[in-house]
Length: 187
Ligand SMILES: Nc1ncnc2c1ncn2[C@@H]1O[C@H](COP(=O)(O)OP(=O)(O)O)[C@@H](O)[C@H]1O
Ligand SMILES: [Mg+2]
Image 1 (tube, helix red, strand yellow):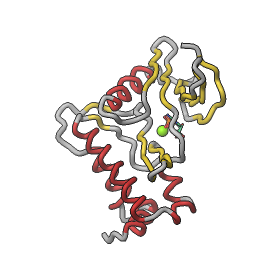
Image 2: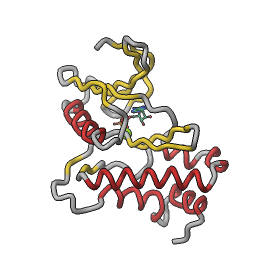
Image 3: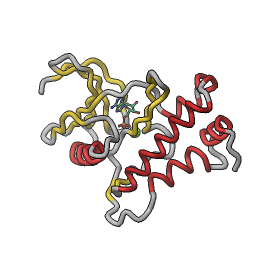
């Protein structure tokens, strides 16, 4: 597939994210590896884990995994990171019901990942979850499956544990505090 690069939207330690357009004019995201990085297996890891997440309807849909050039092309998800969404001013005008629906769906996705033993491992700061405004409310999308791993025993609710602590239970967390206030929860 041929793509046209539009703009670089993020640059991490060893990866970069490009907004691209395919030859049908559709906007997509390309996640690749920076030249100096030693993360040689991004396509392998992210491609495999995100494809597995997609099999139960989770994560941006994978369009291409290119092992030779070490990149993954996926659906573009519009909207801020959950951390910025919750800490930003706009969250003040989000209703309790809207926040509840958004977070309940996020918890559902974490439980679904737990049920297939796919452990994300980086859900604790809210940077790997994007929030999209829809006609009926807000929708979460979990991204960045590069550090994910498979728990063959499927015994522990790893994602559920991580997200519950981050969203609700952490006594010192600023995000948990704002979420508890919004939902009228007491620890
Ligand atoms: N599918 C996507 N749609 C929209 N933005 C994305 C997508 N994937 C990544 N991004 C943006 O790029 C940033 C970095 O991507 P991420 O996969 O988390 O890489 P890193 O390994 O650098 O953390 C994200 O925080 C988000 O802002
Ligand atoms: Mg990330």
